[in-house]
Image (cartoon, rainbow, N blue to C red):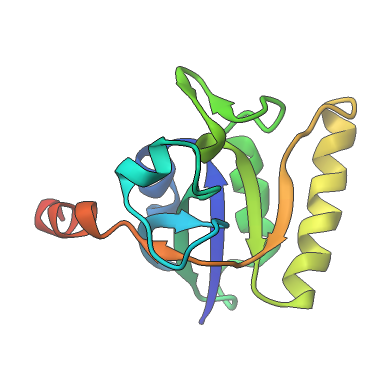
Length: 147
């Protein structure tokens, strides 16, 4: 199993979409890329933590590749809007790919380049090493109850 952590706006809708992909074993919502190890929704909404709302995926690479996940990522959100998706505005709604190893980084750079060409150089998606991932604990129990 491998993990992917992706920021593409508010985490709820992308989490549902990713959970339906064949080969995605588990999904959870959280925060990543911030200045502290743990955070909360209220803290993230201040814009001071530098965390992004993310979906963390556990996937089976024999069923779906990291590249295929990233292609889907670029198809389900607008990677050309800085710090916003639809009505959601703020740094926590940015477009960002968090990688766990050099291979993921290389794949992310290749896929981002492909979409940057498709969108005439307007892609604002960042690529960063996973830093300070935190489960959105305040929502996790509610989420589990709905499943």
